[in-house]
Image (cartoon, rainbow, N blue to C red; front, side, top):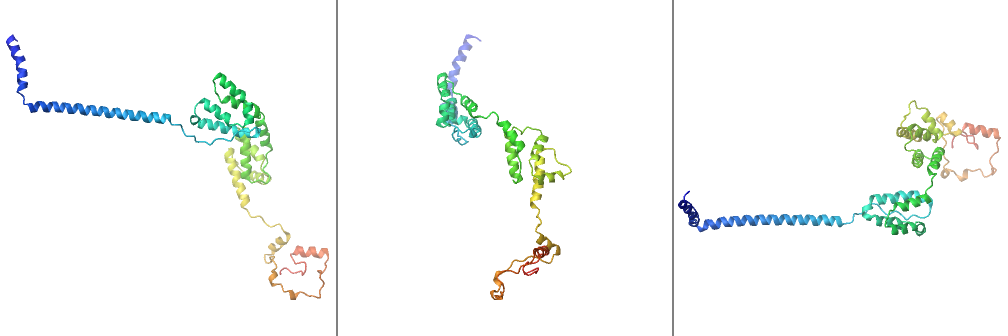
Length: 304
């Protein structure tokens, strides 16, 4: 391109742009300005939303979790209560550990759930935690376990399980005792044949005889318990027969039943005033015979 052509080209562009109507130039500028304003508003809206979400997250993080389990009662120096207090305090720390807060708070939570006498025993643990700046509540529980836990409790529970008898208790009461002692003896993992044998040995003679009459008994412990419950329910629902000799004799005839005396229809005037105040004496053999026959001893009658 020649110098004249280049000069003509550079000089004509502003000339043409100047020749555009002012309304078109202002309209294009206005559209661009509106687009920029919309983009800026969208960016601001997203910033506000991000700020709001961050505030919610920080608020939830600062809220203390709610405790779900109740506080266990304070442990006293009674050894028999240690077996129930220890799992209670462990469950509280396991479920509500975050609600209690950090390790220091959990350490003091265990310490404050002891009465003053037991607190004095574990006081050296408290001093050691201050010096080492290591607060581990397991140190308190381990020390209490060495003092109050019975190392022979499993063997004692096993001996008690073998000696457990149903006696006059209901089957449901016997099962409840058996299951409780079974878990104390760590027998829940025994083979079913051992659990069934121990359970069956403690049953009363009536239920053992009913079990002996069964042709096939389950070999699974839970199924065996179910069969024993069914047999016990049938036994309790049966109606026992009367063992009285007089009633048995009356039932064999089917026509004579002992009726209560209605004192309202007894006439006082019908009593012979001249008779002796004492009943007529009969021989013991005759009295025994009348009773055997279901007769009234005074008048030898079957009915009144």
